[in-house]
Structure formats: C-alpha cells, structure tokens
Image (tube, rainbow, N blue to C red; front, top):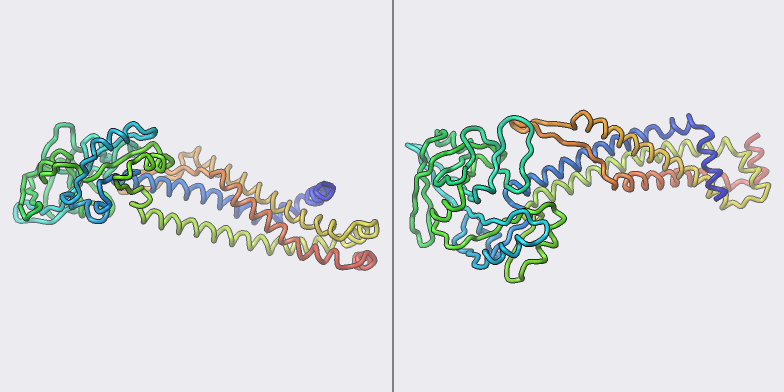
Length: 409
C-alpha cells in the first residue's frame, strides 16, 4: 500500500511531463475506441442485414440434404413435420415469426428476349422492399430483400406477380406491368409454365442479376409442391438462437445464421484481427516511449534510490515502486484514452452518427463503444507500462546506496 501511494505521488508530481509522455497513448486509444465502436456497429448492421436478407436466424428442414442443394430444388426434400414444428417454434420465447419458403430455377421470356433466373418465394407479409430514397429502417419481422426502384411490393391477394431484379429487367427489356413467361422443369421432366406480371423492379448488390421474388402460394401452385421444404425463423436477437435450436426435435435438421452466413463470419474475424494489429502497434510505440521516459526518470532520481537503500529499503520494494509507477502511467493513459474516445463517440452520435450512401439510400451508423473496450484497451496498457519500467527498475537496484549517491552527484 505504501509503495502504491508513493507511486501515485511520483506520477502526479510532474503532471505536464506525465501528460506529454502519455499523449500518444491517449490519442491512439481514443481513436481506437471510436474506430472499434464504429466497426462493431457496422458489422452488427451487416450481420442483421445478412440475417434479414433471406437466411433468417434459423432454418429448419426435414433433412440435412436440403442445405446442400435443396434451396432451388425443393422437390426432393419435403418437410412433412413442418406444420407441427412451426406451431412448436411459434410458442418459444423470442420467436417473432416462423414461415415456409421455397425456390426454383426458371427461364423467363418476354418477346424475343429470355434469361434464366432464381425465384424465391415467401409469404407476402414476410417480404419487405425498402423505398429508394431516405434513411433505411427495415422491420425486424420480415425479410428485407432489396430496394424498390419501380412499381410496388407484393400486396395481400396478389397472385402470379413477380418482383424482378433490375439487371434481369434490363436483359428482358421489361418494365412494370409487362407480362413475362416463366418455364420450369418439374420432377420426371415435366415442363410447367405460367405468365407473371412484373409488379416491381428492385436492386440489391449481387442479387438483382439473379433473383426474382413471388409469393409463396403462387410458387407452391406453380411447382406443384405438396409440402414446404424449409421453415425460416425470425427471432428478437441472436442471443435466442441457441435456446430455440435446442428446443427442436432431433428428427429435424437445422442451420443457424452463422452456418448459413459464412462470408460474414470470415470477414468479421478478419476485421477483429485487423483491430488487434492496430492495438499492438499502438502498444509497441507506447512501450518504447515509456521505456525511454522511465529510464530517464530512474537516472534523475538516483539520489532518491540511494537514500531509500541507505534507510534499509529492500531492493524488491524499489523494484516494485518503479514498476508500479510505470503501470500507473499506463493505467492513467489507458483510462484517459477510453474517456476521450467515449466522449468523441458521444459527440459523433449527437450529430446524427456516421452515414454512408448505399445506392440512393442513406444508412446511418452510430458509434457505440462496448464495455469490452475498457478491458481490451486498458489492461494491455497497464501491462505495457509495467514492462516499460522493468529494465529501468533493474538499474535502480543494481547499484549500491553509495554508488547511487555518487551517480546523482
């Protein structure tokens, strides 16, 4: 306790020098806190966008084979227990919606133009297309499938209506209100065809050149499905996934959003490693600065070390005192950096957060540093402060009391 009080006194004795030494650490950690808060919110928004972009928090099928090649080949993967499982899941805490979906591959033709496309089908009340202008606030109980550029989204009662990707519409030279003919091959080689009216045209990155959307009932009638191949589950948060998955009967197969969104998981891991590298660079720079400062401090205070040794203070007490001073400098610098970073984040949020354009929409991201910022930034700073003081502390105890006094003189 005595050493701790002495260390506090020594650190605060030269406030300006201490602050000047710690300034790089403070600024570095403040920037890191803001960047980390922004990045975590951006990845969270991307995660939610991936989940609500069509994969859901959980997908449940009758067999694991569906997840291999059943998304657009539903005929081989009927799910006879779907109704029973849907009712069971609907009663679980945190479940917002459980609904069937299907998909099929088709050829679309309009006049002399034709192209292939992937058609996904959901219940109408579970599909959402955002407007092409303004701030995006998508609902959490529906799939957000893209931005509507023309026409209208599907409305209750619509049948044989197609929401077509913008690139596909350009290939077909199609517009809202045009009628396209879809042809698909059913099991056994049977060919089915039907006219669909284009109700709307949407854009979505890497989607609008492949996909069209229609309502689930139309798709079931068009493909002659007797049972849904899969159930999509929407929850009130990712924290519910494990408990809801654990409630499922072993007779069904399921995949969580992490298993279905491998790209997100990989990129998130890459960004986390990137943050770790930045933090490491800041700490290494701080280590050299503090080591240089502590070395100078030890030399300037040789008389003090000699006096303490002459009065009977043990070597390990002096060693602990110097290391404590370095650790306290790291603690003060880390704490001030965190506080400055949180303050900067609050100021950014008061000004409406950070925004960027996605197509013609404005996406807003708020900077929200988490509690983990304290541990993963302050603890390494304390360690680096103590490490930087270790070698100078050894110098302070190697010399005898008389040698320390002669060096000071």
